[in-house]
Picture (cartoon, rainbow, N blue to C red):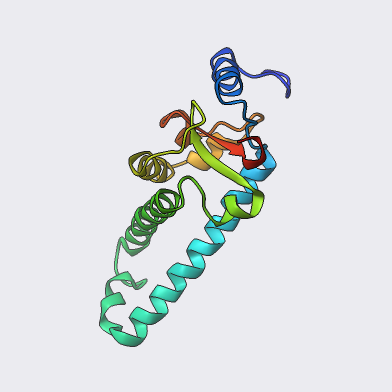
Length: 161
């Protein structure tokens, strides 16, 4: 295991490339965790709000998700993952790499060269988050989770842009 302040060679090369080409600073693990928590809480507030509206306007539409239905728990989790991926992709696409969490922590998702991410990249990042155990890939310092590795993006401090 590497000491806390050392990165694997490939990640160090990517971080050095980012720093040299765009002169930006990668967001800390703590800020990334704050982004995740803020965005997750907002997503669940939105999901609960949609559920309440559906229950009030079309009560029968939620019957398939009751506890008596075998597989309802799995179906609920799959639907939630899909909607979370769509939600995060849409938010990052509309706000050019930002979400509410990133707005609060003053960070932004950018391409390796420091340029603004495209809508396609935002949706790929969103669906990468739906991969089981993706959240655990963000553990460690520096924080370089799968949604960043697979899309060749970084979350950086806005002050460094």
